[in-house]
Image (cartoon, rainbow, N blue to C red; front, top):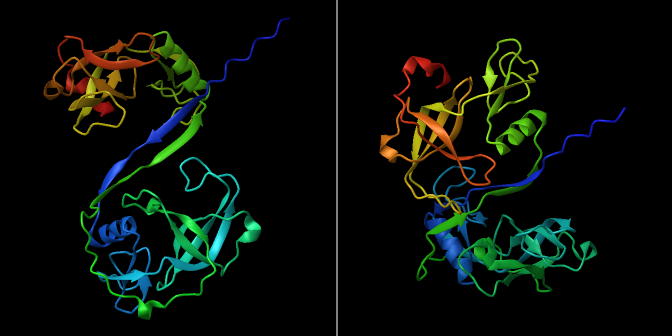
Length: 322
């Protein structure tokens, strides 16, 4: 008897990325602008400790601190870990050490990379100095890395000179990227759902106990906790239950703002899914609006949903799906 071929295992790279702009206060602004000018600033607490990197509130007393001081670009390694395989976007492309460095004049340590030929060349207590980046923009990466240094320790915090924190053209905002790269492998239920979408069909799974149909399917009923396997084709039309107006343009997304993202209860489904609404001015989208999917050529999922022209659905027909 011929064996049944194993189903294709779906895999796809997935990137979750959200770069956001952060406004800087006077302390962080001075610190980053100082790095651009090859100057390392810390902040002195009322107790006399110098914190590098500087913070705006004393971690021990919670009082606001603004007394900026300049520390040396040399320091001492307090602890370290070897990184044999640098990842993309890390400070160095060759193996290096992550080090905590207490700069001369500071009481706390700064995390950065140390350029060293191997782990045998790194030790706690070794002396290091800043290697400045050739092009500096006002970011922690203006310190390209640390490198070994034979000089003696500099003055302690009592000798750290006061600094006004004033620079020409100060850095007032930074873009903080948050990014996660991974390979997504769906389970059986999600794989069936994705394969159906390739044929412009939307399917869910019915719970054998409560008889609710879940879209996208999860492989189990979240209410009853039992496995689901019965395939049910739903939609393709549905009803807008709730929605929001997006006014901030996302990076690499070719959609003009404002636009509407909505939860849509597909006909025959007991769970609303979310999608973009098009084909209608954003300020005319409303709860109860009847919509249908629009498939792009060769697309594996609806590009967006548009109004069907039907009368709005009665609130009682979708209120349980809000």
